Length: 301
View 1 (cartoon, helix red, strand yellow):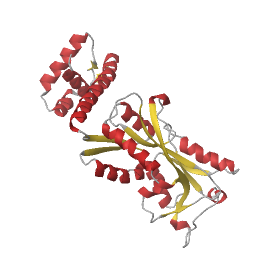
View 2: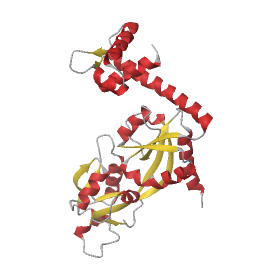
View 3: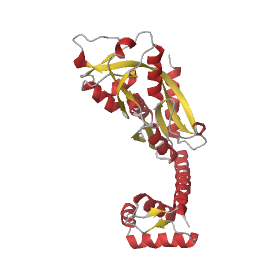
View 4: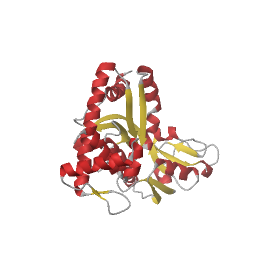
């Protein structure tokens, strides 16, 4: 079995059909079917359950898929490393980001592009769980995330560079307040409004920190809605449904026409932000330089 056959197998595993896989590989269906048969004959096992309309991986197929993804990922990384040593800083830098950190990217991408004009970018958005999967399967190299990074996996697998903290602010519907709107609100005032919180089954860290802040004041927010996305929360606030507490940098990604942003006096709640990558895995030169750029910002006066 060679690397070419492993790519054929993975294409069928991902597409669930030989026809779609052949199209994705830009080849005819019969040769692809023959290659699958040769692989199974060589291994002496069935890799796919062909009883339904789609091909389903058997237990043996699932194991081979996992190993093949890791092997091909290492092979592609080796080729990339050799190419970069020969040609310098080139290629595609794949970055993941949670929505609440997207506003931190544009200025960095602009500066990085000025320094390294031959680098292109692939940006993936998602929650911690999805971005952790992208990182593990080598679809991205770095993640810009709120901390703690809650991907549901062993935290020891990750290297994390912590970035400057980001203070929380109150975000409220502009339609609720006459002009001029307040510039600050007490926690006691915020607790009196319907509250929107950022929370999913996998990621609860930010929600728990906000609730802890309310409790420190002897308050309990009236939670109207648990939202899985910052974009949903901002849309609901703009529509006059409720209020929320989010890190200040989040607001830079959204229009301010229908919302107001208020400081919260006498609170020290900060959102921790970090760059996350896999330990003991090859990082492209582009990824290394991108991380270093953040270090330069911290050390500059």
